[in-house]
Length: 463
Image (cartoon, rainbow, N blue to C red; front, side, top):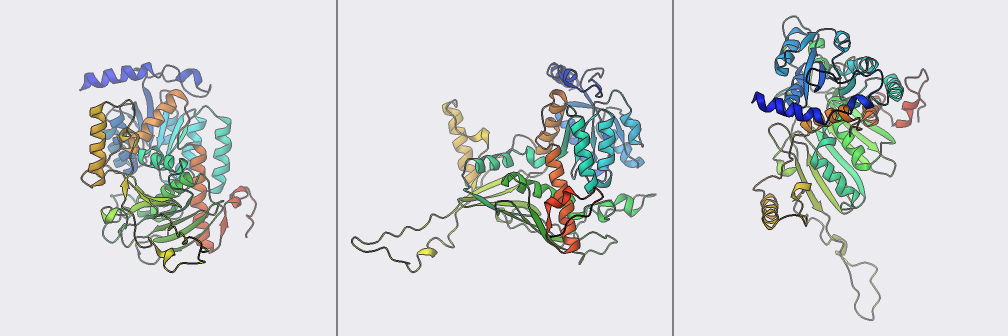
């Protein structure tokens, strides 16, 4: 097994030779002992440990250092990395290490911008978990900083952008298969009375605010940031636009454990061509009405004039799902010969109403029939498609989107290629989070243009 990994790394080096040539002067060249991308990991809590596990599955980089302010998280992160990384409690000490080419940032949200800023100033490429920034002033500051350092890579952890299912859905929209896409509905529902991942048992020596930081506004964007940001990004991507304004209602009605964030939110986003996203996140029930109720918690419905897609991302234990439903055909009324067409025909507009279509599994590129396929390959693809339509099997992505986004980041570090989830994708998502929370707090329609003045010392104009 060790020999296989060494060979893999040598092959990797052959593709990474040009990285130093494109790097900005401030960026340290890739110069580890084996010339693999050397990364540091800042924030090795639950999410950081999850990402480190998936980084190991890609075998495309080596962890040189880890950082966390909590001893338990720090040691666990180093253990998962498995490379005997140097351990730091101050992230600035990690950033000072010359052999660290790039960093992963999985700290609490309120620390995303300070760590990202300092990492960029230290010449590192950056992968930062969503939401990218926490405050309006950070939007403007990070955009300016990245403009000054165009050869440094910044990628945001929005893994649906790296899912083959979601990419296929976007391609279907571009090809007009759904007609004009007008609406997206999305939910992320949990039952916090059954299990609450944000209210974990507090280790000795830590505080609830320090450990369960997602519950508190001074550190967290609440449900909008931690859950909704993923699905707001999906709507932006599918519509090909960012919202004009958002309205919403948030409540703290059911979960009383010291939190001061909303425990349920309902949001409506209006986009430039009249499209709308309706979003819901609650903490009292995890039912999902998509896919015949076979999955729970989260999913999206993409609705167009010619069809609909039900879709959800996969997990470590469950595959992604994508189903396509065609719209019923419009009823055609033909007048009898020699007679005028009637102004209305009783019941004609109801023809097909209530008779829905059966969902057809979305076919990924690997299952599309091509001229290059052999007879056996065609037959195997037809067989998989038939079994998928019957519900006997699921057409699965070739890799977990988390692995795909990690591989994409390492590729961007090596080549300078622009990430699918880049700076502007991340900022648009963060802006949506901030303005959605503002809309619920102030009970008003908040326009996205308000962000231009927010955080600059000027009061935003109210509608």
